[in-house]
Image 1: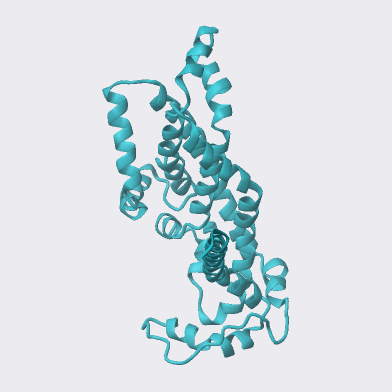
Image 2: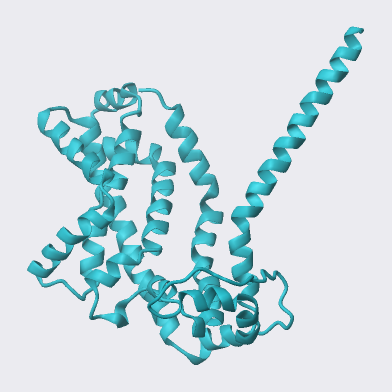
Length: 304
């Protein structure tokens, strides 16, 4: 066997491996994309068509008793008859869904802005100053971040009740602003900023405020965008917090609570609401995709 033949066999094997990986990852991508596609297409179906295709699913979750799906369901990508009646109901005829949508915005945006602001200040302090107190505080932040929010929900409820914040937006916004997730991520990033740059700024007479605003903030721009997107998506989909902390204030509930209370009679409407609900996270991700990639790669490439 000649060297040329060996090279051809090796090239054919590499091509076969590449095509196998391509087909595999394409199949995985389709599996992940399929729920979104089904939501968008099913939002254009009538209630009767959805009941005919998915009636077994919704009947199994209706009522107090939960049973397994006994019959077969029909997953349809193309509706038999396209209708926009659900969108007409959501956007024009029934204002409660738009109110819940804006409730989601009013709850989420202050949490994102406040958490990023607090995290930038705290992470700069954790990264720049040494001492036992700093280590204890940062360790406390790590422990709190590792706890699931279901564990901290009861203390949040008790504190909100003591402060008289139950059934108000502040009961959701204040704990969200002081969440430790962004502090932990930004602290790990700021510790990777080269100390030579900070020392050079100090030799030029820069104060701590100028070092923070002129050196650390510009270098942290990409990771801030990445953290902001993660925090936004996390709180955009919150369900337990409004149900527990705003139990009596249903008019203040976000749209995610409605989607969690789907029933057989509202299936078609829920598909339309879910499609509208996905627009904001999709736009945020598509607009900030480059920032996420840059933030992740830069955070891994900076050497302290």
